[in-house]
Length: 172
Image (cartoon, rainbow, N blue to C red; front, side, top):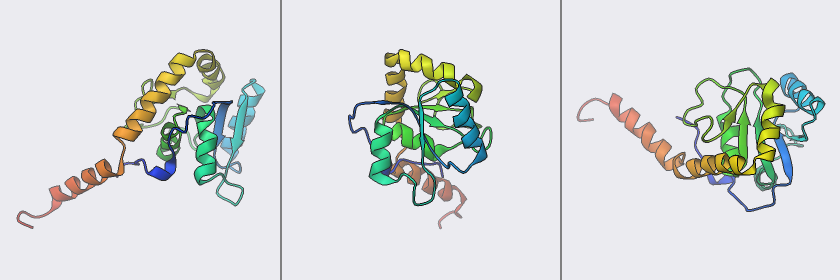
């Protein structure tokens, strides 16, 4: 079953967007650490928090933080890996998601629901969207609206049940 939005993932709280770029993820992962280091060396004002331990950012605190982010970063542990949960978090909280290229980003569409670029291009892409607020807001709104309307538990469960139904014997 595909990832789907659940209310605990957040919503648009209408907060001031005072964080340029935000990454929430495991700080112990070597690829995450080197990616954040690279972005900071290139002058990106990125806030990096999180982890699965007690210092992690969870629930309402996490959602308020993402609501303050102009751009929410999807950095992968492995190149091409799809972090559907992280994309959903960014979109649910109406932050523009910037992801490294991923294999099968379905149901999300790059350039419509999120933006995609190789890590080496992140600094330029971030600068572009920080200076082109209307473009950034359009992608953030498209992603948010899509998640709230289409990527819902009800639709996901209907898809799962319809798939199971295909494999049941006739007459059950």
